[in-house]
Amino acid sequence: MGTGMDLIFDKKHILKGFRLFVLLSLLGFATIFFFTTTGESLKALQSFKAEFLFLAFFLVLVDFFLGGLRIYVFFTKSILKRVSLLDCAKANLANIFVAAITPSNTGGGPAQLYILNRRGVPLSGAISVSLINFFSSMFFFFLGFLAVFFFTDGGISPKGLAYLIRYSFLVFSLVSVMGVFLLIKPESLSFLFKIFSWIAGIIWKKDKEKQKRISEKFKDQVVQLRFYLQHFFHNERLILFGSFLLTILLYFNKYLIAYVILRSLGLDVNFMQVMYLQIIQFFILYFSPTPGASGIAEVSSVSLMSTIIPTGYLPVFAILWRFFTTYVGVTCGGWITLKDLNQHFKEKQIELERVAEKAHLAAP
Image (cartoon, rainbow, N blue to C red; front, side):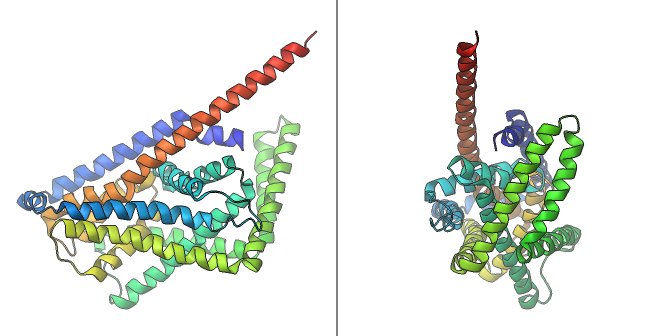
């Protein structure tokens, strides 16, 4: 897994992605401040109740715990070796950090795989866990959207977000169809192998030996992944149910953070309305094309919450909401990921020096 991860987690790429995340976030906040800051914003700060922020921090810790536990339940020793809950929590935080600095959150999954693989989990086994949890989230979003439409007379989102929601729903539908097909027919993974072999043939057309070696390695991973998926769906259905139950708790906890922030601002809001709005909010975030939904998250949060809270309170809410739901996790995940990467590169350098020394001693 080394070469691929060295490319994905190159420090230059990480720094570039982080800069884009910060820039788009600042643009989002600038837009919010320009259109929503009023005299009420000062009132919002004055009505601030600090005790609710302690509760918000507690919910963030619960979020980290549930995210790690949702991974941990798969490592029962029956098929995958035991990995500590702490390492699973670290894998979840690495996911949060790298997702925030890559377009459409695409780097989050590989970051989680990297941490788990470093802890001794087979790559194909780690992928199977990530896939199952991913589709647990998809199913939860589907049920959440049904709840919004059935219990709110067809939805409560502002018209300004209609296109963004349609885009998210289109991506959701495509991914869900492909995912369900993959889970029902794991043998379809062979088709992916053919595609990968074709791509490898183009990239490494001058190095047939390397092309063959990489294709064989990928083929082995496909076979193993199919085995893990079939095992979980045929023999570990209780774990699958536990994963989905933890997914429900995980997202409910995320939604609850918004309600606690509103209460910290002295606003008496309807609990279920906040929950319905957060269902839409996180659905948008999950499929947003920008790194970590930066820019889109800030603006969409204000657009959604403007339906239930005064305009002047919106910028204060947006800052606090993003801080607790994203920035704390990104900060913790960044520290964990970069520390692990530095250790990985040091180990690799030591190994290269050892190999070079052996070659030098063996030379005549």
